Image (cartoon, rainbow, N blue to C red; front, side, top):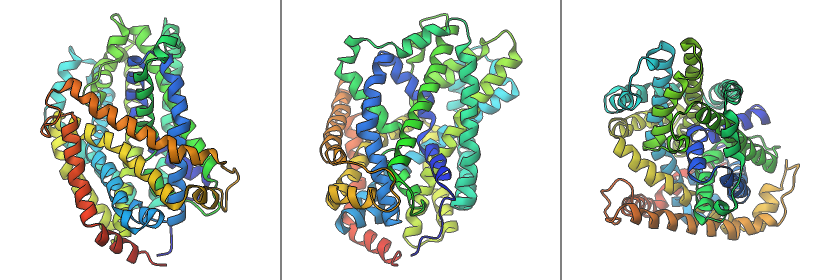
Length: 490
């Protein structure tokens, strides 16, 4: 099957891919993790792991997608060998499973945007009660439906008319909104204290191994590296495209946006908080609900003495969150859609199937926060395995051959040196083992019944669900790969 659709330009591709990387996690999870890991001390390992985890994997995804012109199943079969197509299927499943509940979170952002615009958000006595009443009702189901339906319309229109057109509007709009919030935040009284905390490192904290592990985790979850999403967008990149430059722009662009969001959050919290700022910004809950949906609305209500102005800032903040979530959700549905197109379905039918399944399997997360927390845990950690499989495919292909032929081949303006071989072949596998063991072993400390697969967040539930999916794809690998490759013969 000859590739028919392409992004119209390099910038269209980069903007769309930044839309993958920049999600709600840049705005709420990043700030919470920074607060929990010593402020400025966290930023040093965070930047290091950008260079030895995120950017190398983004480069690999670009090269695999561009060279194979297929989604993860076919791409892994072509790159690593037919018997490893199940790895691509697992990558697809992980991102799709995340899509089921991420659509729910996207709906939350839209709901709070409407609440801000209407003025209802500032008529609340207790934001914790307000959040609980919303989260435990049926409204999340409605907004989950709205979010996934909007995205379906975009993906249905294809790459240039749908994804490219929408991301060209949403991503710059998101940046403009963040900049407005940034300027307002840093001009608040006492905002400098938040900025100092955000950028001042502490040598004792830097030496703490947990800070480094959290920095690596943030990179694994934040940039979109290893999800298979960038691989799919790379299918639509033109032949004469520079892979290393694109990867660097996306990786550093994503982190720059995280820093802008971090400065905004910390400046606001330190300027307006009458209680312990770090306690508040460190609050979590499913999808980091504590900071975003409970504490920040309270802060916005106190930003100025004018409720109209406060509502404006609250409205554009939740609009920015919605835009960030929406562009990431587009890429998740496109990943599933592309996989089904490779399997022989037309785009219209593929989108229809994915959206119906996505809506139905998002029901449990929309109606029960414990289910959402479980899925966030299982498949969030599962992303680390996805990154491992992509690095494995490169190794199977031959790392040096992959670097010289696929990365440094036609269209490459910047040549990648042999340092890449050591990162993909040695450093990333080490990081995968350390991260997965740390997360699973850590679960023992908060759940004595760590082996119980019916608990919300522990080793047992993650291993149990991974095993079911992996066994299924390994058993049916031959059929899945044959069906995919036979439908994509040149």
